[in-house]
Structure formats: C-alpha cells, structure tokens
Length: 380
Image (cartoon, rainbow, N blue to C red; front, top):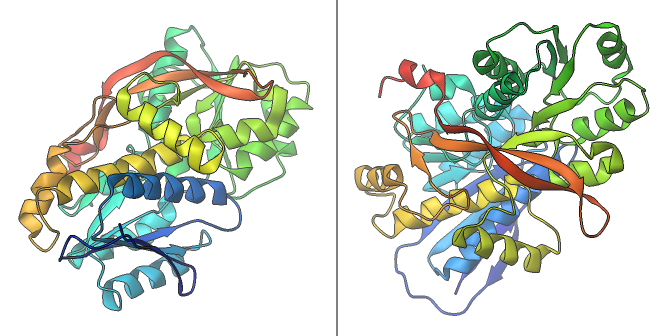
C-alpha cells in the first residue's frame, strides 16, 4: 500500500507496499495543528488517516497543512492546493470562520469540499453548493438537541454562553430553536479568550437555574477550571465540543456530572465504531474524540464514493457521495437535501472512568433524525 501525507512545508511521509490503482486521487487537508484548539485538528487528521490506512487503498495521496487557526492562511493554502497541487477533494477545516473564508471559493472552482467539523448556517442554507458536503453536522444540531433535552428535564431559565464567531452565534440560535422557552441571558465571549472572571460574575448575579456553554478546545478548559473554583452552584450542560476527552481530562474531577450532546460516543455499540475505536486506541494510545470520529467518517465516505467513481467524473462522484453508502461510526447516517447529515443526537455524561480519570459515557438519545432548519433556504 502507498499512503502519502505531506505535512507542514514540504515534509512528505510515505509508506509503500506496491501500487494497484492507476489513477491517483489527491486530497488536500487544511486543519488546525498548532496553537489554541490544535487538538481538534490533530484528532480530525488522525481519524481521517486511520480510515485511509485501514482501507488498504494505494491510489490516495493526502496533503496536510496547518492553518494555525488563521483565515488568511487557510485561504492561501487552499489556493495552493487547487492551483499548484490540483487536488480533487479538500477537507479538514475546524473553525467556521475559516470555512467561510475557504469553502465558497473552493466549490465554485469545481473542487469537492467535505467538512469534517465546521458547519456554518450560511453553507447549509443560502450558500449551499452541489460540491459541498458536511459529514459532521450543521452547527446548530448539538446545541439544539441540548435545548430540547434541558426543556424535557425541566430547566426553566438557562443562561447561554458562546464565543462571538459564526459557530458561536449558530450555537445559541440552535439551542433556543429547540428549547422554545425563556433564557436568563446570553453572553458572547471573544474567540480564544482565556480569562472568564467577568462572565462568571455575570452568571453569579443572574437568576439562571442552569448554564449551557459552548467553548471548544482550550477555551473550555480555561472556563471549566475557573468555574470549578468560583463556588457558583448551577448544573452545567453543553455540546460535546466543550466536553471532549482532552478537555475533561485537563479539567479533572470538576467535569464529572456534567452532561453534553454528541452525534457519537466511543462506547456506541456498532461494528464500525468498534473497529474505529480499537484501531485509534492502538495507533494513538488514547480514546478518540468526536473530532476523530468525524475525520474517520469523512474519509470513509470518500472511500465509499471512490469505489464507484473518480472525482474527475464529477456527476458520478457527487451522486456516490450523496448515497452515503458507508458504515458510519454513528450508526445510521444519511444526507438531507442540503447535503448535511440527518442523524440522531445523543446525551453523554462525564463520569469517573476505570482509570480514575473523567470520561464520557453514553446516556441515551436527545433528539432523533435531527435536520437543520437552514435546508429550506438551500436552492440546489
């Protein structure tokens, strides 16, 4: 097998065990591998590459670049991938503001883009495109599911908090859409913020009966550590992005008892998930996060489509992607009319694992077959 991954500025990692396919496929991955939130991109990359390696295919070259969470750099890298490297498919972006800087131009120029994470509302709705597929979710999904869950659990006045960027505004809009009740307040923080003293004081002074927050990566770690020392006694909820395995281990025991919504859990019982989780643990000596699962599913979808058509035959390859004929680690999976998932969203609880460290355990389903509300704005 020959699998290639070009990292950073020209470093090429290669393993070769013979060639069987004549027509190579080039995939360009731009993701966050350094700075704040880098573990999100690392897990997307590691999950994606695990699926490629497990497939045994010898005709795929994956070029990997670090966007350092900078929209201008992501845009420049995408132009290089399309013009210099002539990639067939692009993927990898974590952050919605970077997706908005990159995806519209990529798909207009005839390159397929498959998102393993970012799902801004504009790309699901008015800016949808036949060459754009989101394999993760639309940004609202996990937040909306938690809104529905908290309503069912009897919370009457949650306070909502998220960073002020597209995924953050989508998050709170999604929560409110399915919560359908009064919220105590909405707090928008800066992207990348690390000091939350002012926000915690505002929460303390509110009449909220619960807290829902969306702070991915290092933001979530910083907030939860400060929250644990604040003495504020409110039940805490959020999406998986605020409670992935990396975050909760960094936070420690303060995370135990919190609940989060996710489209996936590592203890889900299906064959595809067992192969993924076991393979990821063996390769990386850690539990995968939702980001790794999404990277793995994105690669699995691409592989299923390549079994039917090459991206040069755009109509046939696009139709093969739409069929979503692959075994998702999430179980059932299908695309809606805007090429975003229609899927179940689950509830997980942070518990003490067998090793004494916090970990997520599956509790049940929050919402079945959720579809984003922006599909009706999509005119494909």
